[in-house]
Length: 246
Figure 1: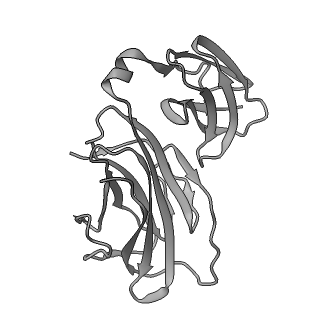
Figure 2: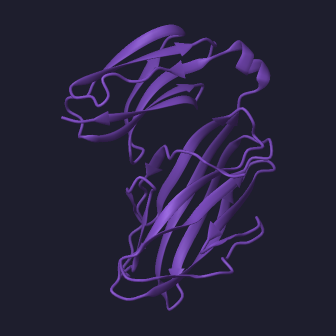
Figure 3: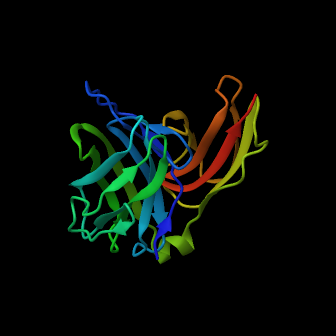
């Protein structure tokens, strides 16, 4: 059974183009993904046999019906990890790079028939896969995204002997400031990282081992959704959603 995990970051590396595009891509939370952008998530798994996936929404922004297919290009895939995708009502094996099926969208229709999957097969690490959506009637009408996954394994011994966790941020929604409590019981380097919905790092602050509390000023931050994460040795071990509202 596949599991869909929360989207944690979207890095906007923009590739410009001179051709008009009939489509736009969106995260499931409604954020526009620019052409050439990177969408990804950080995930620590206690079971690295679990399939993880990201869903991407696609919209026909033209004034007529269009038909699309998708091409996959694997850039980086560590160990025995496998990657595959689902599109236009079908899910394809990891050997498939071009979707056998196509998707026809009427003008203005938003579709959620695409998802990108990574099966860790007990291997952690960073994977990067590029997906290009193209109009079968016009090869110049394309849009591409990179799907980046960070899958890490926390073994049973580490799970029993160490713990890293964030409490809920309060107040939430926050106006001028919020407070979050944390617990770190291992000897790694710990950092509290605040990101906006597009994945840009707003703040990064080192925290000490043990139990602690951090207060962060939000008075100058735009309203919106943010993610507060606790990283230990570069791995995201706990994340809380925060809303800023002035």
